[in-house]
Image 1 (tube, rainbow, N blue to C red):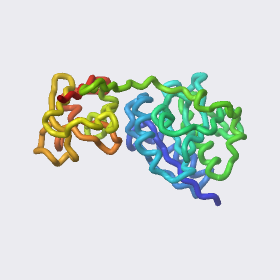
Image 2 (tube, rainbow, N blue to C red):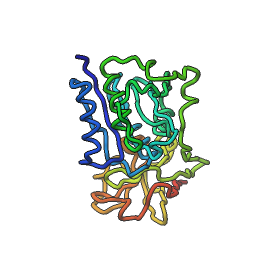
Image 3 (tube, rainbow, N blue to C red):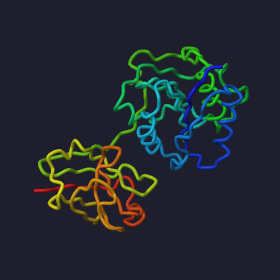
Length: 268
């Protein structure tokens, strides 16, 4: 029996029986598949958060991994469900922007619209395509199913067929960078769209000032433990982006900041 590695990313919530149902479908079709929970803590219907989670975690998996993502506010509508080969990995998910971050880092080489009902469950709920369409398709792909049998293949520039979310862009002018918070991680750290490349040449000492929603911190640190507890610090985190954190607490909760809040870095 063919071994497959399948990950699940959803907004169902930890411990949800919806997740268990998807795993059950996969196990019935492909008992040898290894199923990994990437995360089920995506905020409800937040495609942007789902895109961020996939970009942060999917590239660390082996080539050929099948990533299933179900953050699907359009479930039951005429939105497409697609199979996409992007970078070294395979994805089964709605075409609604979940690949926005990854598509900016890796090229999509193939995209197939999943329309062949032969590979779905016999009965399909209009509200649970993750269980009835995506899970069985992923399980069968893991058994060696040819993606071309899933439906129409968009060989002509598949990246152009992907729906991508508009992403806020940071801008550096001289000794000033304007960006914003684009993600709040599970620790409450505020992750911005200001990359380490944009910070090249900027000082790391207290002449560097970071402002966010009326709050200010100075200097750029290497890790969270470089300052005392309850201190607001700035650092470049594991996503290679500028983060704002409260040492040993939640910056999002303490500062009342959420995604979309402007961040300004200045020096000189």
